[in-house]
Amino acid sequence: MCGLAGELRFDGRPADVGVVATMSACQAHRGPDGDGLWARGPVVLGHRRLSIVDLSSAGAQPMVDAALGLTIVFNGMVYNYPQLREQLRAAGHTFASTSDTEVVLKAYAEWGTAFVDRFLGMFAVAIWEHRSGRLVLARDRLGIKPMYVSHTRDRIRFASTLPALLRGGEAAGADTDTSIDRVALASYMTFHSVVPAPRTIIAGIEKLPPATVRVVEPDGSARDTRYWEPSFMRDPARADWTPEDWQEALVAHLRTAVERRMVADVPVGVLLSGGIDSSLVVALLAEAGQHDLATYSIGFESAGGESGDEFAYSSVVARAFGTDHHRIPIASDALLPGIDGAVAAMSEPMVSHDCVAFYLLGQEVSKTIKVVQSGQGADEVLGGYDWYPPLAGVPRNEAAEAYKRVFMDRRWPALRRLLRPEWLPDEDTPSAFVDAAFARPGAEDSVDAALRIDTTVMLVDDPVKRVDTMTMAWGLEARVPFLDHEFVEFAATIPTELKLADGGKGVMKRAARGIVPDAVIDRPKGYFPVPAIRQLEGPYLDRVRDALTDPAALERGIFDEASVAAMLADPNTTRTTLGSNALWQLALLEMWLQTQGIR
Image (cartoon, rainbow, N blue to C red; front, top):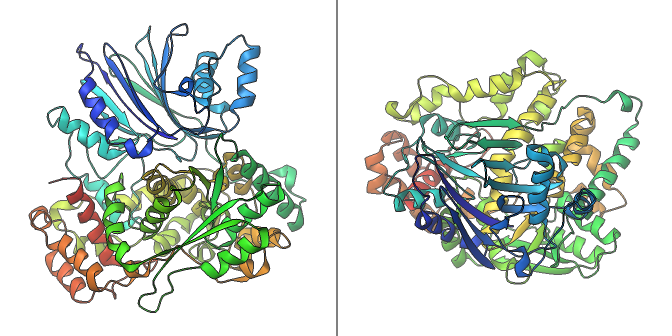
């Protein structure tokens, strides 16, 4: 797990080592264990290292193979790298390290851009071919590892974080377009604060889509290949399966995914929220013989009548499986600095109050361990959210509109009242995006279609990005077994009625009986609670007011002034469709833009 950066020039000039060094330094938090730069003519590659596999200098990056004529920078973890190394040895390759990075490099030499098909894991990778001058960028199937790109006529830059590209652009003489993308802004304000790839809120910076390999030629031309997508179609071979068959298969697939994610040369712990997802991960690790497993839970002070911790449930699980459990209460005086720290760590504006929780949790957990597993992704993959049941029985040709009614924060007429006219796109682009996603072939019923867009779009650019960003802000690697791509492929074939049973994730709840304590299965659904953000008052409301009335915000003039004034006067009444605090959504955008120096 690391941070990578690079530049490739197309204009005959040598790449700028100083620019890449600046970008790499911005990502020191992602790789506190080492750093490196490699330059040759039109290319510079930079890397910050978090040592998880092969802790020796042999695993350092950028990694150069002179015989193969390749240089690589890599972020992530390929869990099946020992098996791939043996295949590559049989094909005649030799190895100077025991790292997965070298396996990825030689896999490219052996299989070309199809190398990604062989990987089980999470990754963002850049490989430069010495002889051809070609650059290859690749991202894992579920977009667990980030890759941001700024591509102009003269050069391409890439990095693990968007702020790194902003700082690189500044170092190069302000050569990056930092204006706000109006289509991305409309998406942020309507599509649950998600900006689908390749766009970001910054016009001159995009993100490589998940499950994508991009080949960039020396002249600057580029082509993308999407190499994976779950089908969300029923498997005829499983037509006669009983609910019990599905439950047994689910546990078997998850057991494999959890065990894969124990591959490391350092200890691996678990973020234990007390919900069924992380509790099942702990149970399966205990079943596999993991002793003295370190588990971590966080809690906040209550606010507005909302509880701020789930310690009661996480403690039940910790006692049941004998984990080395760490309960981390966050004092109220730590929350406000935590908000500012989380905003500064964001690669893109992320509204969920979970960001602050993960940021503060990562700060404490990283003091004792470098790798953790997390239950993130189960709700999107297995139908755990409350917007799925209303779609059951909706005709497939009406699914897109039904989904927009229950999921989108606000519809186009409301957005037109909230944004000033100059910030609106010419048409309802968020609705058009959803319509196009639902119109694609596949996904047998309306719930399947919603699960498909949530798994391949919303999940990538909200929960997954949130976990990676906030844990890596402290050099902590988070692994997500529910996003093992083989588990996701299996889950996509599960009949929707089994997913929606028992209030959501029914197939998993029933499969977990006898594995995790019943109290965890039967509890009301919980979230990562930060009540002080959901119920804005005191210093938290002051922070929001400061952001929205800052001179930079007033000069930018994104929001209708009367609407903002009304929300500030009554900060906790206006809610999005899914119940989030609408004022926080506006303020978070301005806080992020101001923190990043965007004018």
